Image (cartoon, rainbow, N blue to C red):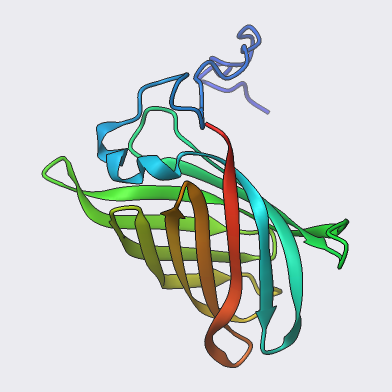
Length: 196
């Protein structure tokens, strides 16, 4: 066995690293300035909480609660994180439901934001979706350009989402094509701003 001619890697004896030094915020009053290309998406930045109704042709309707956090770190994209939980008929939590993380990015042309938006969303059930859409005023509408699934994921083939800020609340409706069914209503909710 011969010694490595390149020597030990430079990080081998380096000192410990401090925690991540840059701030990610959902509150426009603190942290880095919002990147100018995100101005059309500014109304969505914040922490949101509320309730919704779900269903699909293959499952029974259900009630759920949800938290969504949309934050930024000064660069030209937004970080999106959502977690939901099932509610019983008395609005009590039953069990955790869907989690989703991703990024929303404005499409730039000559360094300036257009009204087009790209969204990359993934969830722990093995489904990753690439959405393309447009922002118009306080409305964002997106449809899938691609859906990628692991071999064990449910067969999801397409999606459509419509978001809007209405009287200060975040409302959305989501359609899904899956398990042999075309685009069908799946989720809709009204969330109020609780942070930011």
